[in-house]
Length: 556
Image (cartoon, rainbow, N blue to C red; front, side, top):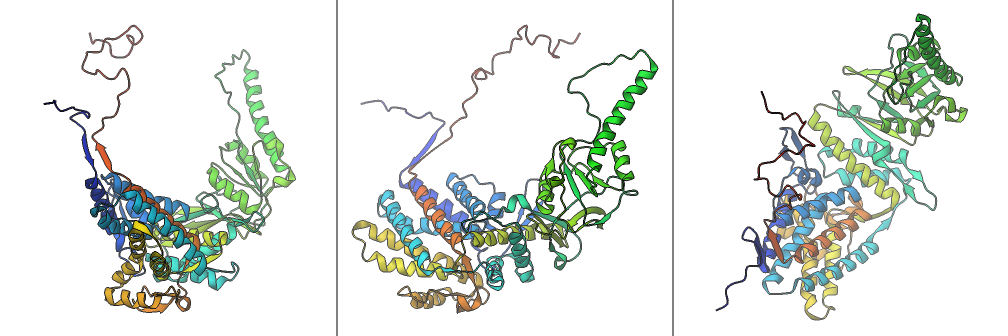
């Protein structure tokens, strides 16, 4: 008899084969079930308590999964999905997970029948290609400048969110903001940078209806000397600096020894003159507003306010970039390099207002701003956070459409069309791949089915009726009206999805399902490799001469 050979250490556990597949599928389904109820207009909210005791109330798939702490590795990669989706297109975070969960669920039957995972994956990838082809076929182009069309689109995207009760409000905000910051790169390409140039300021208090998009920027700062400096300037000339307006301290420490008392006075005078020079250089351009990211000494303050110039100091770099974009100024690093072209004259009004108990500086009514601030008001912090998340999604959708002006029907209609077309095609596929291909087609129905479930209608009846309507891949626009659960024409209800959101959803979901199916071995319990030298902590440490004069001396 041969003695058994130990390959893995005792501490490691290894699962392999179909056991792993089942575990992965179970885990992914569990994740999908967590957020399944948050799909569609009749969606539920989830309340999450995070580690610090704060509360997050949301139904944004990504926000929920981000807060969850999950042990199972397969479930973790499911969460990654919704994050990619959020970063890539900003919407469809819930559908991605539901779809991937469903794809794995239908694959389970084949794994039981001892299908090889690669066969299933191959069929899935084929299904993905065909699905994208169908999307191309049923998508329709849209004129970006047609505002009512765009509004309908953004509205259907955030109709599933908590703020849908405020109807057009958020949609309006999102559209305004994204059209302001859109930059034409030529060749019909629009670049819309939401992260950099749209700032969302949340100020508790007031009503949601007071929220608006400013044609410019605002930030949480007051002028340096409130009593003396003007708080309201019409058509201000703005200079943005990125350097301190105070006396330069030397880089390295220097000691100056002064023998005569007068020399001390001379030294002080030099400092004062240095600052005065700085201010004179700035005042040559007759600015009305000087904003710096760094400090502003009292003396410089005095010179500026004497000349009737308002000053704001220690502004965030990102805010400064936004102001530059909004009023057309250039951020200058040294006052002596100022040119007339660096002065921003695009703003119509500079004003400091008090909201709540804080002062906010507004630079608004800009001529052609390329940056803007969205001002959100609301009753509570939680509400504002949720509104901000919804706004983020809405702006992403608006951005997507500005980039690719193509639409597909919402309300589960797209998925049903894809599903019907794939079912037809499956009959022409030869060999063993036919069945998983067909199963993938069925899996697409998860989205309309979940929509119907969340509306609380008779799911089976609704689904059969819909499948009948879509049978030959026609009636591409028939879907579920998410509010009532009725079968309706999506064109009339203006329920749309952006084409690239859908395409991204399908791609991410199917590729992830394939990845998880390909895993056939999980080895867990791997210890972290310790740093060399830290491997024997048990020995008493002997101090060498090098660290003998540390603080750990023997007490006397």
